[in-house]
Length: 402
Image (cartoon, rainbow, N blue to C red):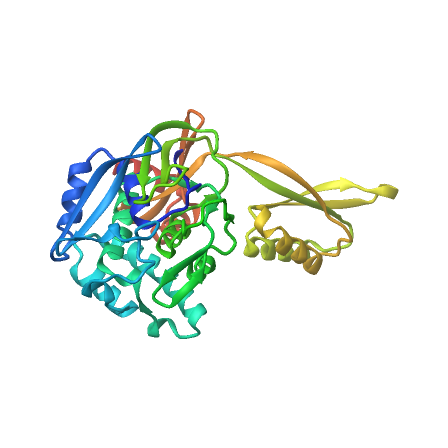
Protein backbone atom coordinates (compact mmCIF):
# COMPACT_ATOMS: atom_id res chain seq x y z
CA UNK A 1 0.00 0.00 0.00
CA UNK A 2 1.37 3.43 -0.98
CA UNK A 3 1.76 5.23 2.34
CA UNK A 4 2.81 8.78 3.20
CA UNK A 5 4.17 9.33 6.71
CA UNK A 6 4.50 12.89 8.07
CA UNK A 7 6.82 13.54 11.01
CA UNK A 8 5.46 16.69 12.69
CA UNK A 9 7.75 16.70 15.72
CA UNK A 10 8.40 20.39 14.91
CA UNK A 11 4.80 21.16 14.05
CA UNK A 12 3.45 22.00 10.61
CA UNK A 13 2.69 24.99 8.42
CA UNK A 14 1.51 25.26 4.84
CA UNK A 15 4.88 26.27 3.42
CA UNK A 16 6.72 23.50 5.30
CA UNK A 17 4.26 20.82 4.19
CA UNK A 18 4.55 22.10 0.61
CA UNK A 19 8.35 21.90 0.70
CA UNK A 20 8.39 18.40 2.24
CA UNK A 21 5.95 17.01 -0.36
CA UNK A 22 7.77 18.87 -3.14
CA UNK A 23 10.91 16.87 -2.38
CA UNK A 24 8.98 13.63 -3.00
CA UNK A 25 7.81 14.35 -6.55
CA UNK A 26 9.78 13.72 -9.75
CA UNK A 27 8.45 16.59 -11.90
CA UNK A 28 9.69 19.45 -9.68
CA UNK A 29 10.17 21.97 -12.50
CA UNK A 30 6.68 21.26 -13.84
CA UNK A 31 5.17 21.81 -10.39
CA UNK A 32 6.95 25.17 -9.90
CA UNK A 33 5.83 26.25 -13.36
CA UNK A 34 2.24 25.29 -12.50
CA UNK A 35 2.29 27.28 -9.25
CA UNK A 36 3.90 30.31 -10.89
CA UNK A 37 1.17 30.26 -13.55
CA UNK A 38 -1.68 29.36 -11.21
CA UNK A 39 -3.72 32.45 -12.14
CA UNK A 40 -2.65 34.94 -9.43
CA UNK A 41 -0.88 38.10 -10.54
CA UNK A 42 2.62 39.28 -9.60
CA UNK A 43 3.66 36.16 -7.73
CA UNK A 44 6.90 34.24 -7.93
CA UNK A 45 7.38 30.94 -6.15
CA UNK A 46 10.74 29.32 -5.66
CA UNK A 47 12.02 26.21 -3.87
CA UNK A 48 15.35 26.96 -2.21
CA UNK A 49 17.84 24.50 -0.71
CA UNK A 50 18.62 25.31 2.95
CA UNK A 51 20.38 23.71 5.92
CA UNK A 52 18.70 23.03 9.28
CA UNK A 53 20.99 21.52 11.92
CA UNK A 54 23.22 20.31 9.04
CA UNK A 55 20.26 18.61 7.31
CA UNK A 56 19.58 19.67 3.71
CA UNK A 57 15.96 20.51 3.02
CA UNK A 58 13.75 22.78 0.94
CA UNK A 59 12.39 26.20 1.85
CA UNK A 60 9.27 27.25 -0.09
CA UNK A 61 9.58 30.95 -0.87
CA UNK A 62 6.61 33.02 -2.08
CA UNK A 63 7.32 36.48 -3.49
CA UNK A 64 4.36 38.82 -4.14
CA UNK A 65 4.90 42.24 -5.72
CA UNK A 66 8.61 41.80 -5.03
CA UNK A 67 8.18 41.08 -1.31
CA UNK A 68 9.02 37.73 0.31
CA UNK A 69 5.91 36.61 2.15
CA UNK A 70 7.47 33.88 4.27
CA UNK A 71 10.28 36.06 5.62
CA UNK A 72 8.40 37.85 8.40
CA UNK A 73 9.50 37.55 11.99
CA UNK A 74 7.39 34.64 13.11
CA UNK A 75 8.09 30.98 13.38
CA UNK A 76 6.45 29.19 10.51
CA UNK A 77 6.48 32.26 8.34
CA UNK A 78 2.79 31.76 7.84
CA UNK A 79 0.24 34.42 8.59
CA UNK A 80 0.37 34.54 12.39
CA UNK A 81 1.47 38.19 12.72
CA UNK A 82 0.15 41.38 11.16
CA UNK A 83 2.05 42.11 7.96
CA UNK A 84 3.28 45.58 7.18
CA UNK A 85 2.35 45.79 3.53
CA UNK A 86 -1.06 46.54 2.09
CA UNK A 87 -2.19 43.36 0.34
CA UNK A 88 -1.75 41.30 3.50
CA UNK A 89 -4.24 43.50 5.33
CA UNK A 90 -7.05 42.31 3.05
CA UNK A 91 -9.73 40.61 5.14
CA UNK A 92 -11.21 38.06 2.78
CA UNK A 93 -14.50 36.33 3.54
CA UNK A 94 -15.04 32.65 2.76
CA UNK A 95 -17.09 33.77 -0.25
CA UNK A 96 -14.15 35.90 -1.44
CA UNK A 97 -11.78 32.95 -1.04
CA UNK A 98 -14.14 30.67 -2.98
CA UNK A 99 -14.39 33.30 -5.74
CA UNK A 100 -10.59 33.48 -6.04
CA UNK A 101 -10.27 29.69 -6.08
CA UNK A 102 -13.14 28.94 -8.47
CA UNK A 103 -12.73 31.99 -10.69
CA UNK A 104 -8.99 32.47 -10.99
CA UNK A 105 -6.96 29.36 -10.21
CA UNK A 106 -5.86 27.10 -13.07
CA UNK A 107 -6.42 23.80 -11.26
CA UNK A 108 -8.83 20.87 -11.60
CA UNK A 109 -12.27 20.88 -9.98
CA UNK A 110 -11.12 18.17 -7.58
CA UNK A 111 -8.21 20.27 -6.31
CA UNK A 112 -10.45 23.36 -6.09
CA UNK A 113 -12.79 21.32 -3.88
CA UNK A 114 -9.84 20.23 -1.71
CA UNK A 115 -8.64 23.82 -1.25
CA UNK A 116 -12.11 25.10 -0.36
CA UNK A 117 -12.65 22.18 2.05
CA UNK A 118 -9.42 23.08 3.90
CA UNK A 119 -10.54 26.71 4.15
CA UNK A 120 -13.91 25.59 5.51
CA UNK A 121 -12.16 23.77 8.36
CA UNK A 122 -10.46 27.05 9.28
CA UNK A 123 -13.75 28.95 8.88
CA UNK A 124 -15.54 26.50 11.19
CA UNK A 125 -12.85 27.06 13.82
CA UNK A 126 -13.02 30.85 13.51
CA UNK A 127 -16.82 30.72 13.58
CA UNK A 128 -16.80 28.75 16.83
CA UNK A 129 -14.16 30.93 18.48
CA UNK A 130 -15.68 34.30 17.56
CA UNK A 131 -19.31 33.23 17.90
CA UNK A 132 -20.36 34.31 14.41
CA UNK A 133 -21.72 32.49 11.38
CA UNK A 134 -19.22 30.98 8.93
CA UNK A 135 -20.47 33.32 6.19
CA UNK A 136 -19.55 36.31 8.36
CA UNK A 137 -15.98 35.16 9.02
CA UNK A 138 -13.29 37.41 7.58
CA UNK A 139 -9.89 35.76 7.33
CA UNK A 140 -6.93 37.87 8.36
CA UNK A 141 -3.57 36.13 7.98
CA UNK A 142 -4.94 32.92 6.42
CA UNK A 143 -6.80 34.93 3.79
CA UNK A 144 -3.68 36.41 2.24
CA UNK A 145 -2.46 35.39 -1.20
CA UNK A 146 0.52 33.45 0.16
CA UNK A 147 -1.83 31.33 2.30
CA UNK A 148 -3.93 30.52 -0.76
CA UNK A 149 -0.74 29.50 -2.58
CA UNK A 150 0.41 27.31 0.34
CA UNK A 151 -2.91 25.48 0.65
CA UNK A 152 -3.29 25.08 -3.12
CA UNK A 153 0.29 23.81 -3.43
CA UNK A 154 -0.25 21.11 -0.81
CA UNK A 155 -3.51 20.04 -2.48
CA UNK A 156 -1.78 19.81 -5.88
CA UNK A 157 1.12 17.81 -4.44
CA UNK A 158 -1.19 15.39 -2.61
CA UNK A 159 -3.04 14.86 -5.89
CA UNK A 160 0.27 14.14 -7.66
CA UNK A 161 1.47 11.70 -4.99
CA UNK A 162 -1.92 9.98 -4.55
CA UNK A 163 -1.05 8.01 -1.38
CA UNK A 164 -3.50 5.28 -0.34
CA UNK A 165 -2.94 6.17 3.30
CA UNK A 166 -1.54 9.24 5.10
CA UNK A 167 -0.20 8.70 8.62
CA UNK A 168 0.98 11.57 10.81
CA UNK A 169 2.92 11.59 14.07
CA UNK A 170 1.50 13.34 17.15
CA UNK A 171 1.88 17.07 16.46
CA UNK A 172 4.21 19.37 18.40
CA UNK A 173 2.22 22.61 18.63
CA UNK A 174 4.89 24.60 20.49
CA UNK A 175 4.40 26.75 23.58
CA UNK A 176 4.28 30.37 24.75
CA UNK A 177 2.29 33.12 23.04
CA UNK A 178 1.82 34.42 19.51
CA UNK A 179 0.94 37.85 18.12
CA UNK A 180 -1.87 37.85 15.57
CA UNK A 181 -4.52 40.16 14.14
CA UNK A 182 -6.69 39.70 17.25
CA UNK A 183 -3.91 40.40 19.77
CA UNK A 184 -1.65 38.18 21.86
CA UNK A 185 -2.91 34.61 22.07
CA UNK A 186 -1.68 31.42 23.76
CA UNK A 187 0.01 28.66 21.74
CA UNK A 188 -1.58 26.73 20.20
CA UNK A 189 -3.70 29.59 18.86
CA UNK A 190 -7.43 29.07 19.54
CA UNK A 191 -8.19 28.25 15.89
CA UNK A 192 -5.37 25.70 15.78
CA UNK A 193 -6.50 24.11 19.06
CA UNK A 194 -10.08 23.83 17.78
CA UNK A 195 -9.06 22.23 14.48
CA UNK A 196 -6.80 19.71 16.27
CA UNK A 197 -9.49 18.41 18.63
CA UNK A 198 -9.38 14.60 18.94
CA UNK A 199 -5.90 14.59 17.38
CA UNK A 200 -2.81 13.79 19.52
CA UNK A 201 -0.82 16.98 20.20
CA UNK A 202 1.86 18.09 22.69
CA UNK A 203 3.81 21.24 23.54
CA UNK A 204 7.49 20.17 23.72
CA UNK A 205 10.21 22.57 24.88
CA UNK A 206 10.29 25.08 22.01
CA UNK A 207 8.74 28.44 22.89
CA UNK A 208 7.16 29.34 19.57
CA UNK A 209 4.08 28.63 17.47
CA UNK A 210 5.02 25.38 15.73
CA UNK A 211 1.64 24.50 14.21
CA UNK A 212 -0.38 27.16 12.43
CA UNK A 213 -4.13 27.05 11.70
CA UNK A 214 -3.35 26.42 8.02
CA UNK A 215 -0.98 23.55 8.85
CA UNK A 216 -3.53 22.09 11.26
CA UNK A 217 -6.34 22.26 8.68
CA UNK A 218 -4.24 20.61 5.98
CA UNK A 219 -3.33 17.75 8.33
CA UNK A 220 -6.92 17.37 9.52
CA UNK A 221 -8.14 17.14 5.92
CA UNK A 222 -5.56 14.79 4.41
CA UNK A 223 -4.35 12.56 7.27
CA UNK A 224 -6.16 9.24 7.65
CA UNK A 225 -4.44 8.16 10.88
CA UNK A 226 -2.43 9.88 13.63
CA UNK A 227 0.04 7.38 15.01
CA UNK A 228 3.69 6.47 15.30
CA UNK A 229 5.56 5.54 12.14
CA UNK A 230 4.41 2.15 10.81
CA UNK A 231 6.65 -0.60 9.50
CA UNK A 232 7.22 0.57 5.95
CA UNK A 233 9.58 0.22 3.02
CA UNK A 234 10.63 3.87 2.60
CA UNK A 235 11.39 4.89 -0.98
CA UNK A 236 11.59 8.70 -0.77
CA UNK A 237 12.22 11.23 2.03
CA UNK A 238 11.53 14.97 1.96
CA UNK A 239 12.43 17.76 4.39
CA UNK A 240 10.31 20.92 4.35
CA UNK A 241 11.99 23.71 6.32
CA UNK A 242 10.72 26.79 8.13
CA UNK A 243 12.52 30.13 8.23
CA UNK A 244 13.65 30.21 11.87
CA UNK A 245 16.41 28.18 13.45
CA UNK A 246 16.11 26.28 16.73
CA UNK A 247 18.22 23.73 18.58
CA UNK A 248 16.07 21.10 16.81
CA UNK A 249 15.90 20.90 13.02
CA UNK A 250 12.96 23.13 12.08
CA UNK A 251 11.30 20.98 9.44
CA UNK A 252 8.49 18.64 8.53
CA UNK A 253 9.80 15.27 7.34
CA UNK A 254 7.74 13.36 4.77
CA UNK A 255 8.39 9.70 3.95
CA UNK A 256 6.80 7.92 1.02
CA UNK A 257 6.87 4.13 0.79
CA UNK A 258 4.98 0.87 0.94
CA UNK A 259 3.24 -0.71 3.92
CA UNK A 260 1.21 -3.84 4.34
CA UNK A 261 -2.38 -3.27 5.32
CA UNK A 262 -2.42 -3.92 9.06
CA UNK A 263 -4.13 -2.15 11.92
CA UNK A 264 -4.90 -2.69 15.57
CA UNK A 265 -8.58 -2.99 16.44
CA UNK A 266 -10.68 -4.00 19.42
CA UNK A 267 -12.86 -7.07 19.55
CA UNK A 268 -15.84 -6.68 21.89
CA UNK A 269 -17.76 -9.92 22.46
CA UNK A 270 -20.72 -11.05 24.54
CA UNK A 271 -23.17 -13.95 24.85
CA UNK A 272 -26.92 -13.77 24.26
CA UNK A 273 -29.52 -16.45 25.05
CA UNK A 274 -32.77 -14.46 25.24
CA UNK A 275 -33.04 -12.37 22.06
CA UNK A 276 -34.84 -13.18 18.81
CA UNK A 277 -32.99 -13.33 15.50
CA UNK A 278 -34.82 -10.17 14.39
CA UNK A 279 -33.70 -8.22 17.44
CA UNK A 280 -30.10 -9.38 16.99
CA UNK A 281 -30.24 -8.25 13.35
CA UNK A 282 -31.57 -4.84 14.44
CA UNK A 283 -28.78 -4.44 17.00
CA UNK A 284 -26.21 -5.44 14.36
CA UNK A 285 -27.45 -2.72 11.99
CA UNK A 286 -27.23 -0.08 14.73
CA UNK A 287 -23.62 -1.07 15.52
CA UNK A 288 -22.67 -0.76 11.85
CA UNK A 289 -24.35 2.68 11.79
CA UNK A 290 -22.06 3.86 14.61
CA UNK A 291 -18.95 2.70 12.77
CA UNK A 292 -18.28 -0.93 13.69
CA UNK A 293 -15.84 -2.52 11.26
CA UNK A 294 -17.56 -5.89 11.49
CA UNK A 295 -20.27 -7.61 13.51
CA UNK A 296 -20.58 -11.40 13.36
CA UNK A 297 -22.32 -14.17 15.29
CA UNK A 298 -21.76 -17.79 16.14
CA UNK A 299 -23.70 -20.53 17.91
CA UNK A 300 -22.35 -21.57 21.32
CA UNK A 301 -23.40 -23.75 24.23
CA UNK A 302 -23.75 -22.12 27.65
CA UNK A 303 -24.32 -23.45 31.17
CA UNK A 304 -27.12 -25.97 31.62
CA UNK A 305 -26.52 -26.96 27.96
CA UNK A 306 -28.46 -23.98 26.68
CA UNK A 307 -27.83 -22.89 23.12
CA UNK A 308 -26.89 -19.23 22.75
CA UNK A 309 -25.39 -16.71 20.34
CA UNK A 310 -21.88 -15.30 20.58
CA UNK A 311 -21.80 -11.77 19.13
CA UNK A 312 -18.44 -10.21 18.25
CA UNK A 313 -17.89 -6.59 17.25
CA UNK A 314 -14.70 -5.18 15.69
CA UNK A 315 -14.07 -1.45 16.06
CA UNK A 316 -11.37 1.16 16.44
CA UNK A 317 -10.41 2.44 19.90
CA UNK A 318 -11.76 5.95 19.27
CA UNK A 319 -15.40 4.76 19.07
CA UNK A 320 -15.17 2.03 21.71
CA UNK A 321 -17.30 3.93 24.27
CA UNK A 322 -20.07 4.57 21.73
CA UNK A 323 -20.08 0.91 20.68
CA UNK A 324 -20.26 -0.28 24.31
CA UNK A 325 -23.19 2.05 25.05
CA UNK A 326 -24.99 0.79 21.94
CA UNK A 327 -24.41 -2.87 22.86
CA UNK A 328 -26.01 -2.34 26.26
CA UNK A 329 -28.81 -0.27 24.70
CA UNK A 330 -29.78 -2.64 21.88
CA UNK A 331 -29.02 -6.06 23.38
CA UNK A 332 -29.88 -7.87 26.60
CA UNK A 333 -26.29 -8.65 27.59
CA UNK A 334 -25.08 -7.94 31.13
CA UNK A 335 -21.37 -7.87 30.28
CA UNK A 336 -18.85 -7.37 27.47
CA UNK A 337 -15.37 -8.80 26.97
CA UNK A 338 -12.63 -6.77 25.28
CA UNK A 339 -9.39 -7.76 23.59
CA UNK A 340 -7.04 -6.08 21.13
CA UNK A 341 -6.44 -7.85 17.84
CA UNK A 342 -4.35 -7.08 14.76
CA UNK A 343 -5.99 -7.24 11.34
CA UNK A 344 -4.17 -8.09 8.12
CA UNK A 345 -6.24 -6.89 5.20
CA UNK A 346 -5.83 -6.36 1.48
CA UNK A 347 -5.82 -2.83 0.12
CA UNK A 348 -9.22 -2.14 -1.40
CA UNK A 349 -10.43 0.34 -4.00
CA UNK A 350 -13.48 0.68 -6.23
CA UNK A 351 -13.53 1.55 -9.93
CA UNK A 352 -16.53 2.45 -12.06
CA UNK A 353 -16.67 0.31 -15.20
CA UNK A 354 -18.73 1.58 -18.14
CA UNK A 355 -20.47 -1.20 -20.08
CA UNK A 356 -23.10 -1.19 -22.86
CA UNK A 357 -25.62 -2.07 -20.12
CA UNK A 358 -24.70 0.71 -17.68
CA UNK A 359 -22.07 1.51 -15.05
CA UNK A 360 -20.90 -1.25 -12.71
CA UNK A 361 -18.71 -0.87 -9.67
CA UNK A 362 -15.66 -3.15 -9.61
CA UNK A 363 -13.97 -3.82 -6.27
CA UNK A 364 -10.22 -4.43 -6.51
CA UNK A 365 -8.21 -5.92 -3.64
CA UNK A 366 -4.43 -6.19 -3.59
CA UNK A 367 -1.48 -6.78 -1.29
CA UNK A 368 0.74 -9.56 0.07
CA UNK A 369 1.51 -10.58 -3.51
CA UNK A 370 -2.10 -11.15 -4.60
CA UNK A 371 -4.68 -9.15 -6.56
CA UNK A 372 -8.39 -9.87 -6.85
CA UNK A 373 -11.31 -8.12 -8.45
CA UNK A 374 -15.05 -8.55 -8.15
CA UNK A 375 -18.06 -6.75 -9.58
CA UNK A 376 -20.58 -5.27 -7.16
CA UNK A 377 -23.44 -7.76 -6.84
CA UNK A 378 -26.16 -5.10 -6.46
CA UNK A 379 -25.13 -3.49 -9.77
CA UNK A 380 -25.02 -6.85 -11.57
CA UNK A 381 -28.39 -7.83 -10.13
CA UNK A 382 -30.15 -4.66 -11.29
CA UNK A 383 -28.81 -4.96 -14.85
CA UNK A 384 -29.51 -8.71 -15.04
CA UNK A 385 -33.14 -8.16 -13.98
CA UNK A 386 -33.53 -5.28 -16.45
CA UNK A 387 -32.03 -7.37 -19.29
CA UNK A 388 -33.91 -10.50 -18.20
CA UNK A 389 -30.73 -12.58 -18.19
CA UNK A 390 -28.74 -14.47 -15.57
CA UNK A 391 -25.78 -12.90 -13.75
CA UNK A 392 -23.44 -15.46 -15.36
CA UNK A 393 -24.68 -14.47 -18.82
CA UNK A 394 -24.19 -10.79 -17.97
CA UNK A 395 -20.63 -11.45 -16.78
CA UNK A 396 -19.91 -13.25 -20.04
CA UNK A 397 -21.21 -10.29 -22.06
CA UNK A 398 -19.08 -7.86 -19.99
CA UNK A 399 -16.01 -9.99 -20.64
CA UNK A 400 -16.73 -10.03 -24.39
CA UNK A 401 -16.94 -6.22 -24.48
CA UNK A 402 -13.67 -5.60 -22.62
